[in-house]
Image 1 (tube, helix red, strand yellow):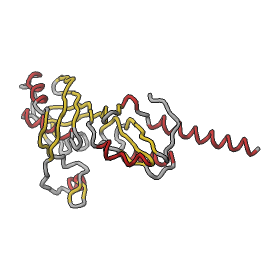
Image 2 (cartoon, helix red, strand yellow; image 1 turned 90 degrees about the vertical axis):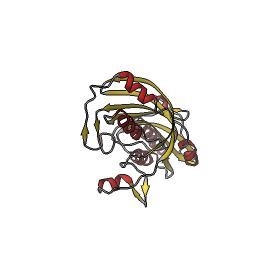
Image 3 (cartoon, helix red, strand yellow; image 1 turned 90 degrees about the horizontal axis):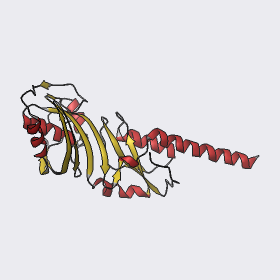
Image 4 (cartoon, helix red, strand yellow; image 1 turned 180 degrees about the horizontal axis):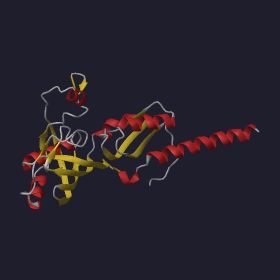
Length: 240
C-alpha cells in the first residue's frame, strides 16, 4: 500500500486510487472531493463500473495535466469467457447467445488473440459513454435505439501472459488512448466464431503510474479524517 505524504490539494496533487468493483469513476471523484473539500477534482480516464484498478484523480492546478495523462498508454489485465455474448460485451447485461467451444484448441485461441496486436479500426460498444447528438450511447442502447457507430483507429501495443482454460481466457495488454477492451473481447469472440464477453477487467498502469502505488479509498478517507481530527484537537488545546 502506498504511503501518505503531506498533501497540498489546492496547489495540486495527482492521486492514485484502486477503484473498487461497481463504483463509477464519478463515484470516486465525488467521494474524494467531499473528503478533501477542494472544488477542482477530476479523473484522468474513465473506468467502467465493472472494471477495477488504477484511477488517477487530479486536484487543484494539476487538473491541467488531465489531457496529457489521458493520452498515455494503458495496461489492462483482461478476463474473458468464450461461447457466450451479451449486448454490453460484459456482465452489465443478460446473455443473448451461447455457442459450443468444444472444437477450439488452446493454440487456435492464442493465435487469434495475438492477431489483434497492432493498429486497427475498432467500433465502440453500444453500452458506452460516447456521446451521439448530445446523448450517451448507453442511454440510447437502453431505449432500444439503433445508432450507426463510427470506427476509430486504436493500437494494441502488446499482448502477453496469455492463460487459457477454455472457455476462460486471461491476458495482459497495453493499448493507446480510446481503446475499448470490451470491443476487443467481442472481436476476439467473433473472429473465433463463438462469441465472447468480458468477465473481468483490471487497469494496472496509466503511463508511468502503476496500481501497486495506489491508495485504497477507505484508507485514504480515514487518513484525511484523522488529519482533520488532529487539527481540531490542536486548536482546542490552544484555546484552553
